[in-house]
Every structure is written in C-alpha cells, then in structure tokens.
Image (cartoon, rainbow, N blue to C red; front, side, top):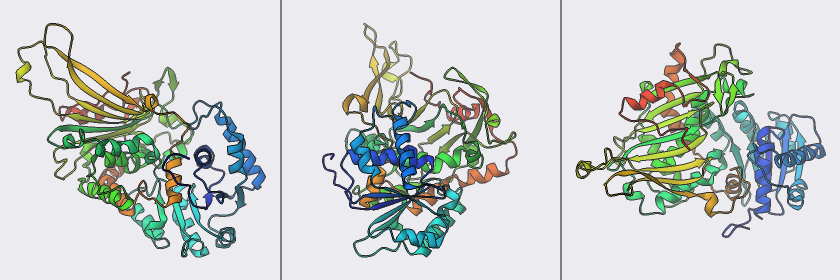
Amino acid sequence: MPPGAHRAPACTLVIFGAHGDLTKRLLMPALYNLVGNGLLDDGFRVIGVDRVDSTTAQWRDGLAAMMQSFTHDPNAEFHPASINARQWDWLAQRLDYVQADFSNVEALQQLGTKLPGNAIFYLAIPSRFFATVVETLGQAGVVAQKEGVFRRVVIEKPFGSDLASAKELNRRVLSVLDESQVFRIDHFLGKETVQNILAMRFGNLIFEPLWRNEYVDHVEITAAETIGVEQRGAFYEPTGALRDMVPNHLFQLFAMVAMEPPNTFDAESVRNAKEQLFEAVTPIDPADAVRGQYATGTVDGRPMVGYRESPGVAPHSNTETYVALKLHVDNWRWAGVPFYLRTGKALGGRRTEVVVQFRKPPMLMFRETETEELPPNRIILNIQPAQGLTVELGAKKPGPEMDLTDVQARFRYEDVFAKSPNVGYETLLYDCLMGDETLFQRADNIEAAWKAVDPVLQAWAKDTAGPELYEAGTSGPGGADDLLRRDGRAWYPLDRA
C-alpha cells in the first residue's frame, strides 16, 4: 500500500455501460492498479449493468482478454509489460454482470437487492441518459442513504451541451440526489501532472509571489492532438471541439493555474476557490474566439483525410475540430492579463501544457551590448506527453561579449519517480470511494464554465460561414495566430523538439 494511503471502505461499484469502451479500456485497468496498490477492501465488488445479453462468465472472460491485449498494444493508455495473474484474479472473482434496461424501475429495484451496504453508481453511458438513469435510480429507491451507508453517483462528461442544458441536468440530478452524492468526473484531474500544478504553485514560495499581473504578460493553455476523429465522427458531429474540451478539461487547467490559494485542500475550499475564479471570468466575446476544421493533410508522415471525409461526418459539416479563445479575468490578481486557450485535432504536435510567459525586463542596461533583445522568461507546466516542468531563462553566452540567449531548466517525472502503468482514473475512483470531492466538479463550477463560453456557442449557431479550414499536420487555422498577433504576441510553437 502506498505510504499514507488508507484502504477504501467495502463498497459495490455498479457500472452502467459495462460493455462500453470506457469500462474496458480505462475503468478496469484503473481498478486493477488499485488492487495492486492494496487500496481496495476485501468486501469490494463490481456489478456491470448493460442491455447486452451476456453472462457473468462471458463478461469476465471478455475483460480478461482485453487486459491481456493491452500488453502488446503500445498505443493503449494502459500498457503494462504483463498482467499479474494474482492481482487480476482478485478483481475477477468480484465481478458480476446483470442484464438490465437503465430506465426500468423494476430492474433497478431488483439490482438494489444485491446492494446491502455502500454503493457507487458509475454512469459510463452516453450523456443523453444521465438524467434518466439518475431519476430511475431515485424511483427505484436505491440511492437513499442511511446512517453509516453511502450511495454515490459518478457522472462522466459532457455535463450538458450549453448553459441551459447544464442547468437543466443539474436540476434533474439534484432533485434526486444531494450535491454531496454527485461526483462529476473529469479524467484530466486524475493526472499527476495536473494535480502537481497546485503543489508547484502553493508548495514553493519562489512561484506564488510572481503569479500575478505585475509580472505575468500572458498565459497559454494548450491541448493539441495529432489524431483526427477516426471512427468517432457520429459522436463528434453534434459536439465539436469547444463543447468536448473547453468547459471541462481546459477550464480545469485554467482553474489550477489561476485560482486564489484555498485555505486548505479540503473539497469545499478548493471548489470555492475555483468558483470565485470562474465568476470573475468575463463572458467571452465571440470576436475573441476562432474555430477551425481540419482538411486533408499529412500528420507524422502519414496521410489523413479531412474531417468532412471521415465516417459519420456530414459532407458539408460546420463542426469545429479546433478552437482558440481569449479569456479575461476581472480580479485583482489577473486584471489585464489575457489567457489564451486552444485545442484541436489533427495538429502538427501532441501537447497538453500551460505556458506562463512573464513580462520582459527593461532593456536599457543591455543596449550597448551584443544582446539585441531580451528573451522573456517562461514557466511551462508539461502535462503530456512530456510530464514535468520547464523554466526558460536568459543566460550569457560564453565569450567576452555580453550576449544573452534562452536556456532551459527541466524537471521530468520519469527522471525522479518510478514509472507505473496508470490511466488517470485510479486517483478519481479511490477519491470517490473515500468520499473526497476535491477533484470533482460542483454544480456551480459547471454552470459558471458554461456561462463563460455560452456567448460564443450562440454566435456560432447563427454564423453560416462555418469554421476556417486548416491542413492536417499544421498548427491550426491562421485566425488563431491572428488572435494573438493583434495583441503583439504569438503562440508558443507546437512543433518544437
């Protein structure tokens, strides 16, 4: 067991969507890793629920085969050298399968008879079913809590598709459950490097005094992918890059970087700090938003068809696969500092990172030297694929002249900590079992994020021009470069070494 960690209480995890990709590719590997760390109680068990006609043995066998397949799939998020038989057997013996319709009250009442104690209901299902399943759980009477017994519900993203739908989903969910029972999950927050942002900011005195508008010129938050939509066109068409990434993933990174220091790391203090930040965000002006869509090109040396030629995509689709936004935060710490957010598919580099660029120092004392321009200092929070922290400084080149150049100081997780297979859900599942809501979104956090982007969604819905096309394998549409260029700035390059 990891130092300081406690074994979670006995609980039954009920997974709706037992045959889905999320269950097979992420939840089961995460549970397997929790077993290996000794964090699950002997009374832990899993009930998979789905409409698929299957037996418990068939479900277990399918999961076992999938786990073995990860050992020779280098592209899988979970890629261990081998599967520990004892570890997997411990989990497999606790797997049960129930065929049921999610909206059938009688079926869920029957399911309730298998839940004598603590239970967590994980909605690994399409978002259109979230409210219905929660309401059915309420009608079946299986989410009512008793003294010493908890009942919790985990809801995946996307939580709504705009401000109105997010409010309505919150209303329906909270008509059945108390806020303390609802765990709105964002798997980005399960990444060690995302959580390290808080540790880095608030655990090191050298950073926090500089973390304000007196010293910071601007902040860039990037989540760039080299893959296209592949076979997910039918899902992506009604969603698009903004809904898929911005109010959840990018806003969570934004919160970690920009929120005020919470008094403690308990759930309500952290979520209150996020809410204060989100409320200070000025609703985004559509003029400060750029959308793009990738066309045919070459990524990593391989040809890629354009988005409109992908399976499940309309031939004249106006769905954006790229979005860039400028945020303004109207508070004492960040007034006047723009935050630039960008995310997209089929780009020339795969990076998730935060770049904090500082103001340039005065040039006066260097005017009579060989230094033509002082390079700005940057702190780069590397989330993926590199994991760690990079600091860019100006240093004198060797020689008799005073000439400065950029140098980098780097910290990489892999250089310091032992690497272990991890899919990012381990911490989140464990926290849910322990009742720790720190890394989960509260209803007001969700609605505040949607409120910020809602003007953009409304403007795009009326705009018949559609997104700007960009060639696959490039850094995105030219409009995104113009967004920063008009402020006298430029994006930190995606295609750097």
